[in-house]
Amino acid sequence: MDKAPGTAPFVIALDGPAASGKGTLARLISQHYGFAHLDTGTLYRGVAWVIMDAGGDPSDPETAAIAAREYAIEKIAGADIRTKEVGAAASVVAANSAVRAALLEYQRRFAANPPKNAAGAVLDGRDIGTVVCPDATVKFFVTASPETRAHRRWLELSAARPELQEADIYQDLLERDARDAAREDAPMAAAADAELLDTTHLSIDAAFAAARRVIDGVFRRCG
Ligand code: CDP
Image (tube, rainbow, N blue to C red):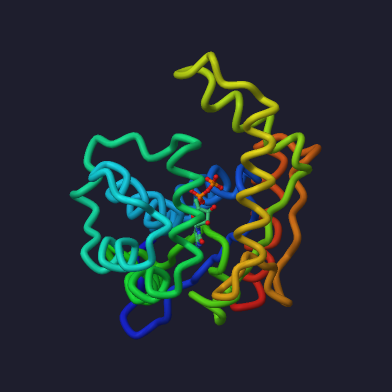
């Protein structure tokens, strides 16, 4: 769907903890409505990967700040940034305010001017509804029980790495969620006006249908 001249884009924010299903939902929603999609976790994962690839320390504040300021998508071409090690390092660099500041403008610009003149943008992350796009048209906070999330992530990662233990992934997710929720700058949180979507007992289709009901309701109200 193209954006009519002079109209503001329809912005959908999806936040939530690791492996809650927000990424899959964001993809399905963006395809269904013809909106642009930005997985903001790839920015933090990308910064962490660049540092690790150069043998640097993601917890060093200056190293992380420089990597974020110099970050460009081309730097991670072909890299596997979805590993649990990169996820853990991403949540370390994400607690650094200089890193968050360096990545903020790009995310806001994406929402305000979606690529290919799309009529809307879907952003998923931890702080989209609270900090990046506090005026988003629709906000979701997507959750699931830690056991369900660990199982989903294990299914996703164990195909390539059968040695991975579900119990270790569970532990990793808990640590990452705790770090993401406890940091001072833009902690993971549900915006006061976010729709809560617990996907523990929902199939992908059912979660997508629930999200569509909310979005279509807003479309109708907006005319
Ligand atoms: O896919 P998953 O839910 O495991 O994580 P992700 O969305 O790829 O994000 C990786 C890490 O980046 C998170 O654990 C957060 O620390 C950080 N992040 C963030 O701080 N703010 C965002 N908007 C997105 C991700």
